[in-house]
Length: 193
Image (cartoon, rainbow, N blue to C red; front, side, top):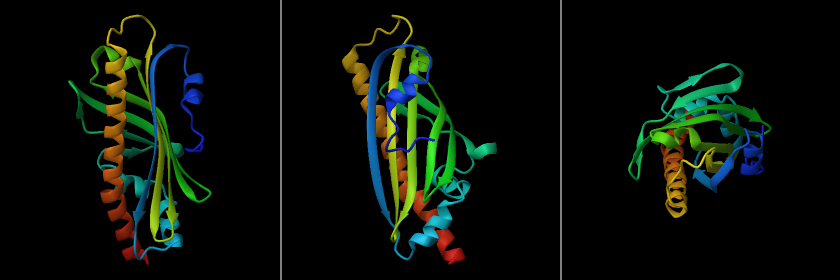
């Protein structure tokens, strides 16, 4: 598994079938979540069982655990310009060293019409304990590939859509970290401290 800090979009693209890349957008994001009363050791124990924080972070009714540390998740739909999109992802989550590392293995974004099969999304993330805090870091990339000349949307519009999509994803993930993940960690610490 790639370290989120080292996860580059070119590595993802080089592992996918050859295609003409029309657009690439990348963002890195870090979030520090204060958790008074939680020690680094308690938070490490909480994070070390991946299903525990993932079910707090995501909608527990929509996240399904499979073998080998893999999870399947279907997001609720949301609006992006004139589209109503709904991501569906398969990701792997493992406790490595002192962090929960998450890597998307497959992501399908529905609701883009003819662009559905042309959009490639990558996310490498990790969550690790600080002293009385949780730290979440993510590298997110979005690519629009074109295997033919059928995409007739101006490049500026595509760039704007890509930037907006990544910003919406970051906002949603940050909100989930500040609410569900924080609530899950607090509850677990109170119960088992």
